[in-house]
Length: 110
Length: 112
Image 1 (spheres, rainbow over the protein chains, first blue to last red):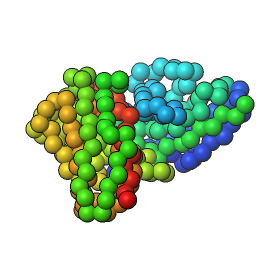
Image 2: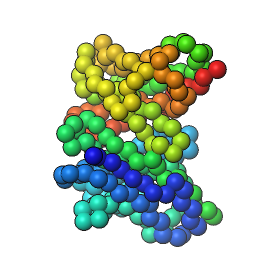
Image 3: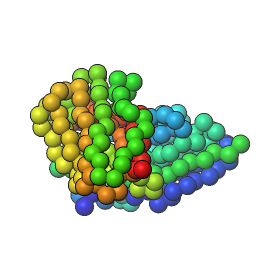
């Protein structure tokens, strides 16, 4: 079964501290993974995708196939990073299907 | 994603009533999706459509219906068979199979 797990519902850190939002997946192939972010009163939007190997707003995420993880990291959190973060997995047999985790709310305190 | 509009922003449903949520896009995307977002459960796929006049059930289609008569529009009807309709509903679009998704602003449905 294809599934995405985000074990933390809420993560609170102080400004300037490192942050890691966890994402684990179950998948029987080469996964395509995404991180989406939803800021307060804004739309859900793509933050980054693993195949792009990019850093967006200082965030990076590395696919670890051995641990089936795709954790989102940032070395120094900013207050404007406070938002809801969702990890998502594209379907194996149907590329049009996406599987979302339950989300982690990141709260960056001043 | 400014090209995806959902209306209304808030919708109230009475017992036994069918209600329709609108989703319109001007991005010329082929694929359109409806998700339901509940606290602590993330997004769950209700229906999706890859092309006009075609759509498939997602993981929680029971109590919902859709149509795709035009490329730009993918309305979702919440029928009286949906016993727990209170949720935030998100519409999304996608260009091709290999592209990511773009989301609308959402509609919050409440039951009176």
